[in-house]
Amino acid sequence: MRTNLLKIYLIIFALLSMSIGVIAQTTVWNPAANHPSDGLWTTSANWTSGVPVDGSKVVFNVQDAIDCIVDTDVSADIQIVQGDGGTTDGSVIHIKNGGVVTTRTDTWSAIGYNKPATLIVDQGGEITFGQHMWIANQAGASPVEVQLNGGTINIGSMFGMDWNANGNTTTLHLNDGLLNLANIHPTQSIGANSQIIIDQGEMQIAGDHTGVMQSYIDDGKIVGKGGAGLDLRFEAGYTKLNKDVVVNAVPVPILASVFGFLGIGAGLFFRRKRKQA
Image 1 (tube, rainbow, N blue to C red):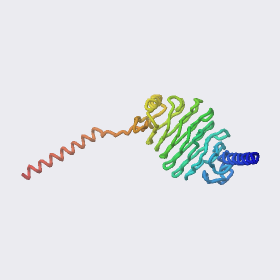
Image 2 (cartoon, rainbow, N blue to C red):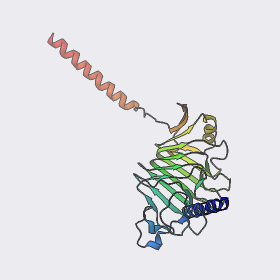
Image 3 (spheres, one colour):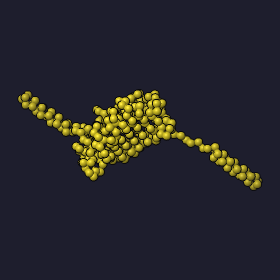
Image 4 (cartoon, helix red, strand yellow):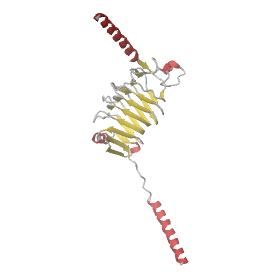
């Protein structure tokens, strides 16, 4: 009896293992095999092993592949490795309005792991890195670019631009939207040739990291677009960083003209009053 039960358990275990193996497969973005491709993440034929599902490793490493467009919620428990070897000279993931991507909480994901790559997140788009977000993690990834154009990037654990100090060139353009970090390393999160350029967007980190952020600002690794100043503060449990809002002063000649006009107007008003009296 016990022997039979043991056999049953072994069969169930084997079936579960096979199921996990099927789910946890690698699928590669290769839209050229689906010519003419629509470029959509949701089209199965654009991938070597179908649309990513829970457990998938999602790889971008095919030379000259067209941009991968995300315009709907494709959330799944996946690992993204963009620029994962291969021959690619710059894959692009473009998350548009309505597009939502999430990655696994038990492992990292990378934008430009060891090859160039670009991530674009438009207004109404969102990507959540369940664990670490590595931007240009290994040697050979230069250049890697992230463009946040009004959407949201959430990072559940550590954030790193050339984390391993390989000299990669990386740039994060915070044109608009929210860069939402759970943590930041005092020295490794923004490498020597890396830079965050803030325009209309906001960067926030859970907890008080104002000292760390000020060091990155002082080193020129976080800058305001066009040389604008930055507003760094600790507010409601978050370290927040924006470009300074500058109210332009009214030029003196214009003020003089306005006051002169008002003065003349007042003089005429009182003269008329006197005449009427």
